[in-house]
Length: 199
Image: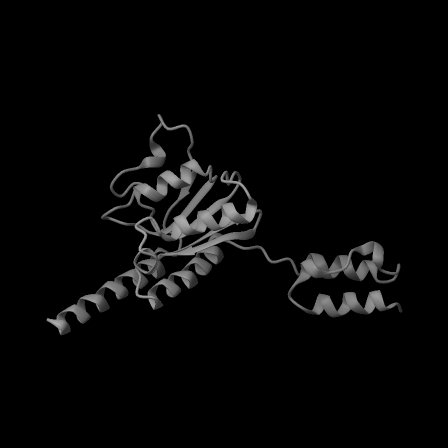
């Protein structure tokens, strides 16, 4: 058996199937093994899976003393942008999780248009972020918890339902809403408790 075939077997046992060598580099006997292993190891990410990744970013915001909101931008199943709330630490009122994730994705792609991309965020976007999502031409927005104070996807206003605007992203609400909402509620409850102790 050739070294190339051994390399394929070792890599198939791992998790990173994209790193497999291409079938033309294998001997005839190993090509069927490659196809079967590849087809049975494909992992399909769901909206909930991407939202969990956004929640992990929200934890980073919380650790920095920011409101725990996280966001990821996905293109063809691959995360190309990440962000979490950082307006306090950056001294930037626009540094919301969505804005930072969109900026990251635009830098990664070299294009301010994020056509065909999806944005997953743990909290319903505000009007500022909704505008940025439209301008970037994101195709699909998925959010977790609703925001009854500043939500611009139906809670206060519904920017994406405004027919006079020239771009409309598909909006999916409530993915892991319980987990996203609990993280925010716990954060603000702790903050109130800390303020009471100071006073």
